[in-house]
Length: 217
Image (cartoon, rainbow, N blue to C red; front, side, top):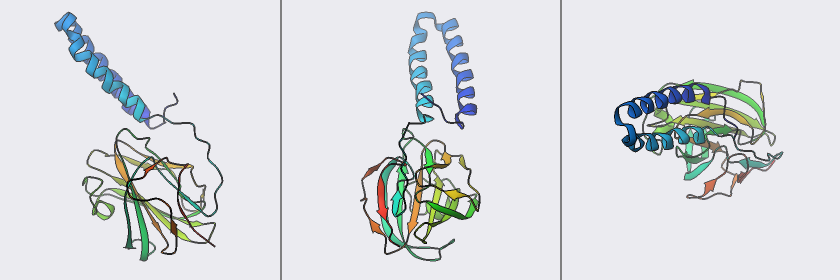
């Protein structure tokens, strides 16, 4: 199983803690140490599972809006995006549990025209105000269909580290990685009002694969 590059520090710390606690348990508890080691081993395995990088066949897209993350669609509504577009848009929000793959991918192909990191709070990721009050990043892409699409990584109550690798002027390719969020969070996508929405609330998405909307020239 391939592991994401963001896993190095976390796995190193988890390994040291696991070895230390297991060693102390064996020394003091002997045969009863399994009562501690087995649950720890499960948690240790989940850390590796969280940072997995699945093999996915990413296609080229022009009109399609691709799910940027693995997760569950929790919101589809008309809002006013106030940071960059500054006009009415359709917001699609996808919540990621700690068990989901947490690679963040471009939802559309085009050119990166805006990026910004915002420090903030750590409200639970499904809270509506988390989109504007939590620690977050905002990226805007001018799509191949000449639409401005904004998407936002949002930290949650558990997620405390967001990374994004894109820069203004970069070429965005739908389905390809641009960032990562550690341990549960949310992605918001803001689309033009005339976008054809294909997904619905409650849908489970597979990042880089599932088409959630279509935009026309």
